[in-house]
Image (cartoon, rainbow, N blue to C red; front, top):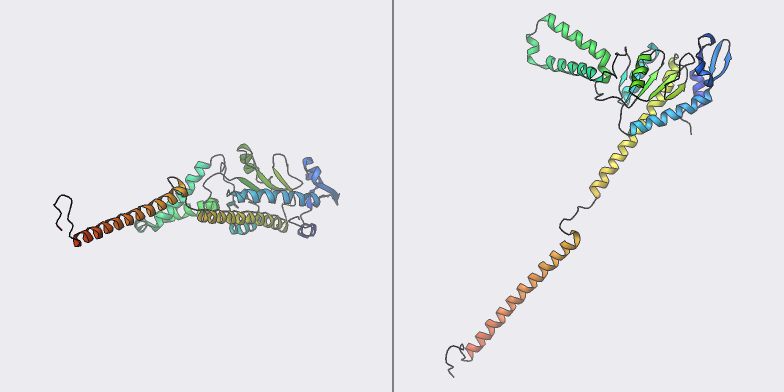
Length: 299
């Protein structure tokens, strides 16, 4: 069953492309027709591509890896920030910092610097700084927060990128291609789909279209995360229910030890019984007037 319906895509305006004179010939397989000088995207192919991308994102999130969303367009900023934050995935909604993927260690240093500023503000030494120094540090913190605030938890390179408008985010596309990171993207009729691993032919300018596609992808990721959680709980339950391994010969050795202990107890009882019998016999002999072998008999 498809994740999206034809009518949903139609109502959201996903089928509207760009003007014919602005088109990219590489998008010809995904164009249905031309109407009033505007290319119309084939929504049947869009549905298939959405399902393929959603399934792939579900598998990635199920493995526990991160997917980085990139959308710096004005129409997509708020949508991506809201939807992606809900599933706890990193995103870039402001300017793409050059070298974010290819020079990732430097980006991590900037994130650590932001954390060190937070610690400084909480420290008592913060009160000893001048007003001007405090203002400079807080401005620097705000600048770092604006650019890197959404990728604080990204401790390593993402497993995939989801991009809205590959034409605008061409630097991010190049960096991901250089590092062989899979790219999922909304591709309009004026964009080049070459080098994109999972193409979603769609209108990347309308906010309703972006909202529908991003919501579908986030739902798929949420399903993958929930499946991962269920699997982990199942593994923990199986581990708890697994019997404790018995060392030094296993269960048979334990049974043998128990049996030997019983035998020893029985032997001890038999020895005690024998000793009591001997004592009784000696008492009987003494009562009869008999004495030990070493002494002479008296009758």
